[in-house]
Amino acid sequence: MTERAIDCWLTDMDGVLIREDRALPGAAELIDRWRTQGTPFLVLTNNSIYTPRDLSARLTRIGIEVPEAQLWTSALATAAFLSDQAPGGSAFVIGEAGLTTALHEAGFVMTDVAPDFVVLGETRTYSFEAITKAIRLINDGARFIATNPDVTGPSPEGPLPATGSVAALITAATRRDPYYVGKPNPMMFRSAMNKLGAHSERTGMIGDRMDTDVIAGIEAGLHTVLVLTGIATRADVERYPYRPREILDSISELLQ
Image 1 (tube, rainbow, N blue to C red):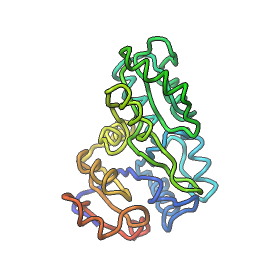
Image 2 (image 1 turned 180 degrees about the vertical axis):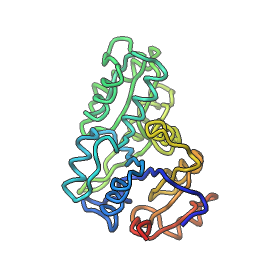
Image 3 (image 1 turned 90 degrees about the vertical axis):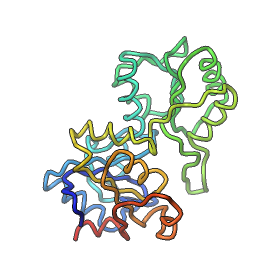
């Protein structure tokens, strides 16, 4: 498959393993192979709403057995980044359980009084009051962090505004850009490799997007695999000035 010996894997979730709450071909089998063979791996997602336990349960319901310890979210990556930047710090958080739980477990205090950071994540209930508070705290000196730059998210009814859209609103009001931790920031992959104790030379990244998964994988020095079961098509690849090392129709080809 590749000239590099890949013994550790990072893989995106939506568009690679699942699509609209159904398992994609080969996903369950590949995860089972990695678990049986003891191959280090993590399943990654930019979505910061859910805890690893929530995501593990969701995947189990559709037939993919991923222990919560093998899930790495933008919320966990954000918590790891902030705990390195300001151990035992404080934050005003706009987000849901996935983000608040990660920050609590990293030793952060949630407060709306002179926090070190304003941290913006995904939520289905954005509050005008909370956004106003975030703007005022940033203007007063809090550093602005966002879990990911995605401007929309999927729903059965159609696209929903996501973290990047709300971050743009806050930026317009404060003239402060957030630091985005999630993809396409390669830091998310580096923090995942730190969790696994893996080295970039022997780690592969599987994704379905050129503008997040592939570019971040290249910048992190990983072996990049693009699958065509999600966002990208073969025609899309030609529009970018960079290429993945492999293009597969689906993750099932990694079983061969």
